[in-house]
Length: 317
Image (cartoon, rainbow, N blue to C red; front, side):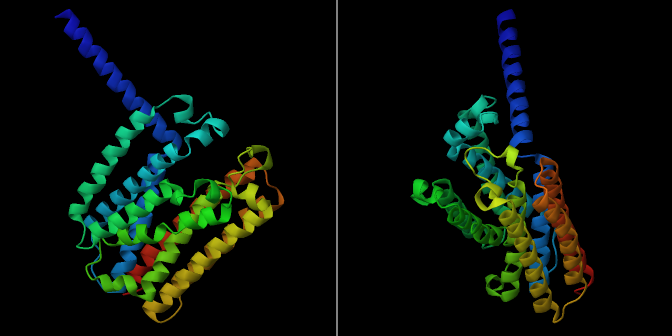
């Protein structure tokens, strides 16, 4: 009947509009292309790293599922933050998708549930330790969502807040690595600890670089590293993170190969190149230099991870 046809058409239009709004939300808050790139490189580094430590064969199937696991986990953390920071965003970032009404909390809940079902499904393709490690990481993410039940106290202590949230990479990356690990004793080796520090520092580096702003772009909430530590302090922090990521890379190479060679050299060359945009922002903290600094952080991240994967496959044999 004409009425039924009209109803079907209206339902179709609503679904299409919802998909478009989901897509616009992701473009603004969780760029799919960027996070696929991030998840693939981090998963590849972890899996190639454990294959070298444990003398196992690298599996592209394990890489696929580890990448999906990492991507979906990060997406869930983003949605958790949307709910956790909603009141804060309404006050300081009203232009963001949830405060301005582009998407509703119920619609984000649907995305959250859909993604969580995907995370659970992926566990069937993991190793024997993947499921318990997932729930360890999931439990820590819930504590982060509740801000360890110390919301007001923790929010007043920026450094402690950051440390408590960055420690999350330990259970998270152990979970991702488990897609290629069959013997849990590997998790207790010094080489694996160095690998965790190497990958964790890089994730922290991208987070800090993303939240370094020119003074004219700071907001009243003071929730950036430049607002908390000043331009010089935040710049020094960024350099220290990059430096310790390369130190951990050197330690990993030494533990696995018995010497320090091409991999570490590449890391220090990348670090020297990264110093230039850090210095430029430190002395001229403009919006343009802040943007260049973040781009340089992404390039540094990509260079040392691609270098790590290539070197471990061709130079560690």
